[in-house]
Length: 474
Image (cartoon, rainbow, N blue to C red; front, side, top):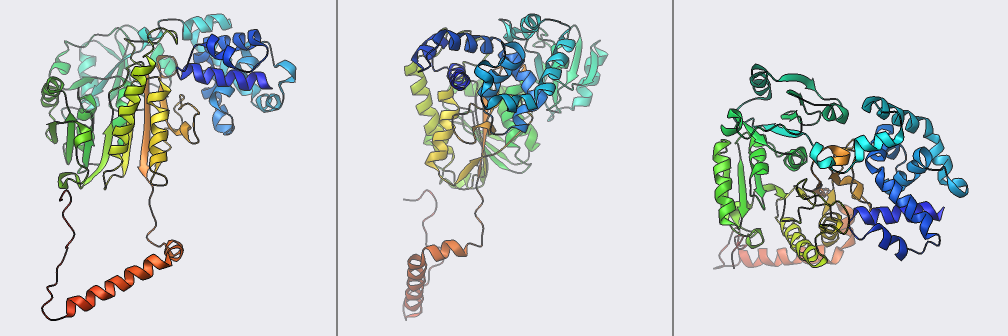
């Protein structure tokens, strides 16, 4: 039915910060504006609940052709709305196949949150101020200590260790002096939201890094093995750099760039406190760094976390599409820089894997930038499918965008974040089809090689080995 498809389109645009609900509804071609407006508003109001139910029931994994925003609208109608209107069209039988699982997941959510009405569930999971309920995430710096030793230290201080969390509900339930081990990152401890550890001796000694879980994803997903050469393109303030060093075990090399001298000085202090010894800092604009410089010929991993609007940071929430949203001009300027930075990063000749991340909610800085880079490098790089169980995926703006990850206080109990992992497409060494497709080029190259050999064998002709100019040479 056109109602549901249009509602999904409007919802995607609202979440992508491309306008207000009212403006997008009136700009649509749907005739019953009031009906469409009500459906989108109610679906968005229950967004966090619907995301949890859909993820728990595995709907998107089972129905791979069903887009996330359409799924959200349909599940709202099935479980929380007035039922399918106009018969529901072709979507009704699809949803009815999963109806029992979806209802069971909704019931389980109510039991876990100790509520009985849908409205009470909404108050618990999606009321304003959800950002203030984001837990305190603490990354154990494995260059200086181990998660086990950190846990023992906190236990001796009177904290109650609850083991490894099994769900977001475990994190939501944290209170007092209880803490958990994160279910995804083995070196991440989780404390109640208001826990203040800035004066804790382990933090002051560099054994702990106060870092949101979403901010830990880029280094974790880049996953450079010890001994690798890594480039951190826009590195300050340095938390992600220290995480990369921990993954490398200080073995290998990190080239870290930032053009702000003050931020770089602060970063140097942070890295020294964290015990990082494999990092070379440079006060330089990443766009001015030459990919052909011999120093970077072994760089196979790049982390690119460029300047962004910061619209996903809990301290700067976007409560409404029109309140606090970056201006169109600012978004265009940021996106332009981000596109240039990503294209530049992909031009490093030995690059195998790159992570692009922002703390922005805006499509212009996220999916649009990634899609631009893929179009500029057709067939050279692809989006790597990562963390299939992560509940919040990229906006469905291009084929494969579901491989991107999004994060938010409502869906992942973290700050707002975006992550995409790009990896180089391997070309087979046995390519007879490709050779056959360009016979003139292959034959021409053979003739040129034969002429060079004849000249080289002539009297008085010097033989030169490796005559190509060195990288970076003019």
